[in-house]
Structures are given as C-alpha cells and as structure tokens.
Image (cartoon, rainbow, N blue to C red):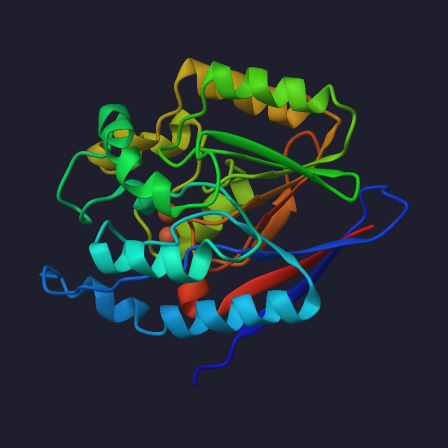
Length: 274
Ligand SMILES: [Fe+2]
Ligand SMILES: [Fe+2]
C-alpha cells in the first residue's frame, strides 16, 4: 500500500478560534482503461488507494474535505460508480476541475459549449453545485467556484460578492490557481510549455504554444474577477490544485494562495485556520 503524505499548514486569518479542514485535489481516478491509447492511466494507478486513505484520515480526524477537482480523470461508467460509492458518502465540499468535464482526455476541444454539454454527465456524481457553492462551517464561509477552463464569469463574482456581504471570512476554492509570477515560473522551470494558471499576462501567454495560448488567455470578465478577488478583504485564503505541485505564495492583494499536489501522487493537506 503506498503511503499517504499529509502536509500540515496553519493560516492565521484572525479567526480567534481553530477551524481545521483537509484539502484534497487532482485524484484522477482512472478506471476503464480500454480506451487509453496514450497509456495515460498508468500515471494514476495508486489513485484509488490514496483516495481511500485520505477519506479514512478525514473521518478519523473529523475533517471536512475541501476538494478542488479532477477527482475523475475522464467520464467512464466505472469512474462515475467510484464517485457514487466513495465520494458522495463523505463530507466534501467540491470545486470542479477540467477533467470532471472530460469524456476522454485529448479527444475534444474543451471550450465553453463542451463544458455545458458534459456537466450533466458528471454533476450527478459530485456533491454540490459545480458553478458556485458556499457552506459556512464554524464561522468560516467555504466557497467554491468553477474556473476549470481558465475563465471566471461576472455572474460568479456577483455571487461571491453576495457571500462576502454575509460577513464571514471566506476560504475560496478553485481548481486552477491564479497567476503569480513565482508559481508560473516554477511550472515553466519544471519543463512545461505553459503555466496552466488563470490570468497569466500576455508576456507569458504569447510564448505558449498557440492552442495553449488560446486556452489560457483570460477574457475581460476573468480579469475583472481577479481584480475583485485580489481586493476583497473578506477573502482570507485561496486553495487550488490543477498544477500538480505543492506551492504557497501571495496574490497581489496579499491573500495567501495554497496549491496542493495531486491526490494521485499521495498528497493531501490539513489546513488549520486560526
Ligand atoms: Fe489534475
Ligand atoms: Fe486540472
């Protein structure tokens, strides 16, 4: 049995009491590999084991799981059955990942129309609204919104503003990290041809391969969203996945952004808010 790696991070948000939760992301459950022409599923062979261990850890310690997406590598009947049996019974708050909308990796243009076509297949197997969701636990508002295609809408930000107005400190969960120079440079230094972050500026996206540039250039609404997230004092922490690395740094407004490596890789992060 592979060994789970639980990172432990304490974040001071001026709460005055402790609230703990378990961040999990990018499990990439990849069952049904008959169609796996590219041998992709071999990378995720420990994903199920790690997921079961993570759920057991959360249960043992009484932690809600804050899952920032890509539980499923693609849409297969066995993957959906796995989610029904092992995800839905857990206490999980969920942010959608790009793979949660993916019928088979690399077989379609993953654009806005594709997502809204595919969402009806995966949404019944995932625990909450995938566009936007909020749940208050012990005085902390856990909010998730879908940025899984590198875009955030004005509607999502209006909903986020309405959550901020409730007066609780917000922990925001999104699949894809917001651009910071430090994380983008790290991902590129790791040998990637693009940085896989939301809101990368032109000096970065102009150097990406054309298809990645088209995919990752932010639109006007996304730029407005990032400006709001950076300036909203009620947002105390941003928790993300997607890039499959462990990373922590500050957004321009000084909010901490935490990224956790993939659950398929054995990582989860216990976060203590104080
Ligand atoms: Fe992923
Ligand atoms: Fe992803």
